Length: 296
Image (cartoon, rainbow, N blue to C red):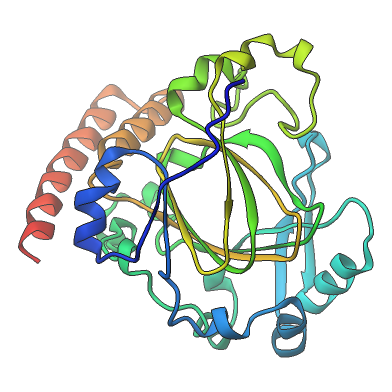
């Protein structure tokens, strides 16, 4: 594989500047200094989370490479930090813990993200019920050296994601949607690769992977990665890492996402009439929101 070793890094931008210069290009980009006003950036560490929010209960799924071994776990944050710092293998990885399920005090350490201001998931009342599940979806990720998610995947239903690095750093391996034919897409779960661990595999077993172009980079503390919907990615950590991810629905992935839902509805046996009405409503709503966002 030919590795692209750099990713574009840009200064902090307003939402309008970001949308004009970057989000419409459908390419990953790292924006610096986006979270400089978050209390979490100054205060959070493993010890701080354990001491101040140790009683908070978190439910997460340990991302084993073998999905058949995945299991939900419920720990307190203090229990999680204790196990993480003990060096026990496999290293636990707190992932996809929704902030809305945690205390208001903890959430207050996380401020708004200017470049994600026009997130249509925040207009949940206008969305069909099936698409409201992700409304306001912000999630906490915590790991340490040896933690990570080694299975290549793209995020559910073509949502964009903004990943803000609060503490430490996180290693990313990213592939364009154009490389999908070479990434051994799972025959049932289209958003996952059949390669169990992209950081530890036998190249002879996956010869087509050599045709893909990986992008490797490190997300540093205080930076935010914009990862467009449909982009494949995997992560690993070489040090303590705390990050917050915000899923986003915007004008740039609106059509792709509602077409994905329409496909799911057809597969679930919805009548052609219901699917057509859904598509028509989403098309019209998208045009309405396009106009609304231009005048605000």
